[in-house]
Length: 375
Image (cartoon, rainbow, N blue to C red; front, top):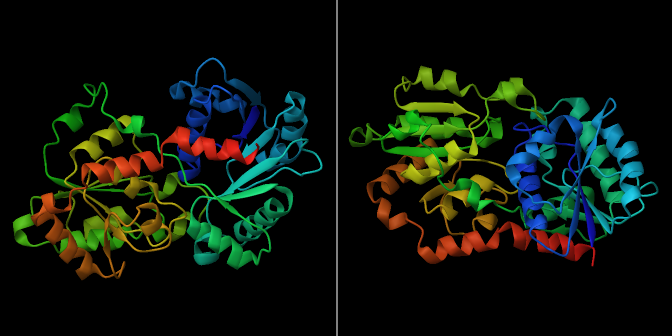
């Protein structure tokens, strides 16, 4: 079977969960020996594929994007892809080429309807565009894929659909979170403080400010605990209004936490792996997730996890984490952090929990669900 993956949306290290889905899906598909995998990718980003080690049976098709990438997806991609007589095309980020031009079945992933839930974080142009692009996908894609049951229900409700949407969860590349060859990271190897870890880009709905305020209120006996905030800062983010992001560095300064809160910005997978392996606790205060990969990763790495019951998070964490009831209640966050840090062993995931999480999101398993769409 010949399957194509449309990767033209890719902007390395800038598109968050969509990029991680693409990584995991390509790795999972490449592991199926009965699949001829064709990757359609922006010519400028070919080097992004180097670290994935996909093997020799994968066909890489570089496309020199002319102007707007959506124009290239709509017009260039069908012309090029049709040459390969594919059995299916997977569009991994919400936009679908016209059905009449693409001579194969197509499946398109919609990650979330964030723009409808937090409209103030998007420009008017972006909101109009997302609605139009989603409508185009719902008309042109043979199969629409949601990355959680929450997103599936949201699509059905907000767009008043009469046809089925398929749910396929995001894959997680567990190997990327294993510690390998970290001798060059001297700054990490000497970081022997007890710390709480949070991984989230600095969008407003990630609710990082609540976590920082709660951390500031921890009791005196926990004053040596550090907080590490991993994730891109507003200047590096795409898709939402940067001026609506919380200024977390300014909040840290205002609260006098400069010596206790470390804001890393974007870091490599190898560095992230180190933090996952050494954190005392993982905290994820997000108010909205289409999937919510970080708390799932943390559970799979054996960390106690404190998060919210918002949107997809209980679903994808399989109700195996600890949850606050009010996600913006600073005092509740402070109390729960204090409780979990004081009795960490009680909240450690069991071996069976770790195995359950890892098996559920293993890339080869998730890729098989995509393959089955075209059988």
